[in-house]
Length: 332
Image 1 (cartoon, rainbow, N blue to C red):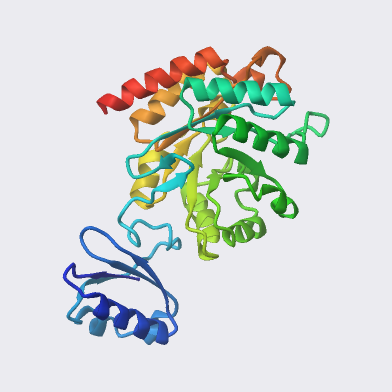
Image 2: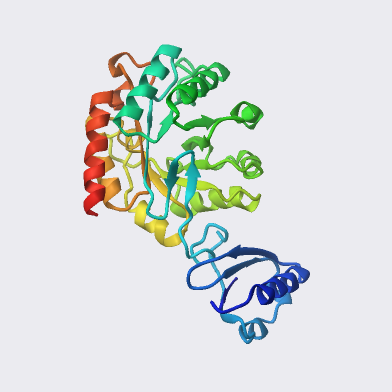
């Protein structure tokens, strides 16, 4: 349930109402806005006389929220959520370009790529330290050493870092990581999501390979219900019957998620397409349909990459893409 309060409501009136609602056993979430404060109420609504609430002097309207996702629901929070990461902002008209290799391979590689993507226009550095691979014989990442190298790249480049967590037991290794990524395979790892919800770090939550938008939002709700409101949704392609691309990039997800939720939405065209030649046009399409950011894989030597070289841009290609994205954003 949500309550829209009149813009002229005083802080004393609002505080008194919130105190009373909490006394009724309800969890109250407060969302200030230009048109007035919105209160999101979670709990047993049977205890509440809705007509009584609607008739209060400071109440503009009372509406029921029938969707199972509450805190990430735009009806709960009409204003776009803006998430700050270092000097970058994501959401609410702010756009961030995230770039870096699929996997951290060695010190020379990650430091070189960090310098190159920063020069090309990236605002955050991505890189995998722990890698979920379909085959147990493929490169699995450097683990803790990979995070150490990412932090070194962060210190030298000044770029905030984004990297994926696979196991909650590794959470202490992410203490200095700026954005924790939850990969597609872990989107419904609810124990992991709940633990991440107890942190205050931004969480980049990727859509699963065969998951609906509703399921993605419910996963975001798991994080937010534990207190962490800093969630970034990521569309990275879904599995369909077509085999020409690695996955099918569902760009309808961007405007649809913006309609349903106040959370920022970024797009990963690298994992969606699996082909470097498809990444620039799909990245541009993501920008055109309103994405709050794009995350692309960039490698200094894609032909010899230990992981996903076929979908990685080289630094020159990335710089060209970043230039085109800036030009497109200037006109839309």
